[in-house]
Length: 288
Image (tube, rainbow, N blue to C red):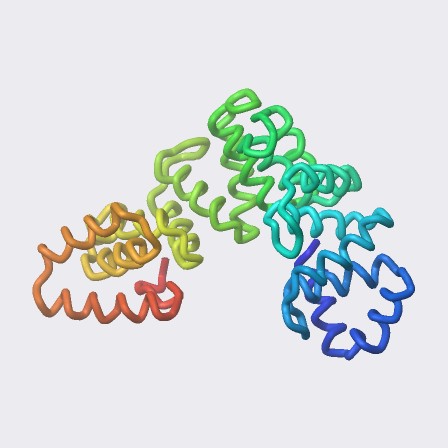
């Protein structure tokens, strides 16, 4: 939902509608214009990012029951950006937005009830909200629901259902789902074990900067698990994971260093620097 809306906002900015139409409409009390301007300030589309101004605009629209404005305002109160932090008020706004069908708000409620930081943990409530958001194709909700079915939390354990939910979310580009799908293939949870497919999904998650996926690729290549052994690329991915803060990867990169010839190690270090500089988009091999 919001990706399409953001693209529309950006298009309208380029069409100079901020001054020409939206601001006068927002000043007259139009909730759609208030929400649209709020999004511009929230993301910094065409104007400097300003959470305080965004909060004021979202508040005006939210008071007129604009469901998306209620969601955005909830995110600001939940994080304390532009407004004093109030998780209680954020929860109220998420509920208002979710009950109007905003999938992002429904998905966030699933997270809130699953984590139990704002409210007591309630796995059944988490499942309820994730199910509602998943019906709208929300990738975060699909992944969360997949975890519940895979582990049997709040629902009857069903690894096959968990795998299918991970798959839907992963194909939408959700990085955690891509990692979870890779794990499913690696260990045969809910699907036939397949190292090649695990490698593919670890690769996609790794390219998005997922440190554990990067570590898994380092293991695959460094020790020849499911692929011909390639210590250079094992080292590259181990270093990428270590840079992302995964401590086990530091130990692995040091272990691989000890087994490499000087020429190999120099090449690995050079390619590793390129990989990190290009934000993991040039971490060879490219066939993953």
